Image 1: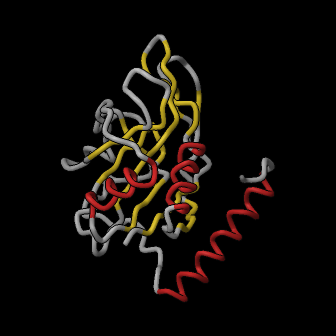
Image 2: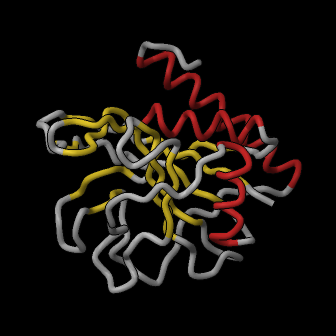
Amino acid sequence: MRPSNVVGQLRSRLALVVIASVIGLGIGIAWRGYVSADSSIHGYLRSTPTGVDRDPINVLYQAKAGLAGVLASVTADLGWPDYGGSMMYFGSGSGATQDAQRASDCGGCDRYHLRVKAPADPATEDAIAATHFEIVTWCGHSSRSFDNARDVIVDAEAAGGRPVAWVFWGNTNASTQCDGYEVAGDGWIAEVVLP
């Protein structure tokens, strides 16, 4: 588990980045970052193409198998099927809609929820994803944590033998949920390397 204090968290993340970098040099894995022809993609999901920033992007999947590889890994390592959910947008361009979603439980339950945008070219781009833990409230699902949900994915993918690197994007803006709850991410993105 990560330390609870800020300095400890930063030290842990720095150590993970250094370890991942060393491993990457040794076995040829390097963080490519997300490069897209759609320049509207930034650090957050939106509820409409021109709406306000909502969930932070907090997972990248380096997957030469594209979206199919990401979904196969999420199913194998987490057991999350497609329970559905609302449409969200990875920016404001014409191709900004999410391509898939997976969840740990049904649509009317408290659950972990993941939305994924497929890369246009899996050979040079990462799939981008945003995940959160949400509870059922009087107004529908309301996110309670972005970081915890990301860490659940990281732990499961690492246990499944996938290398993980950390990158700081700084996407820490708070999001107000339908019930008024405010939640923000810590700005760290985990990049999961799939075969």
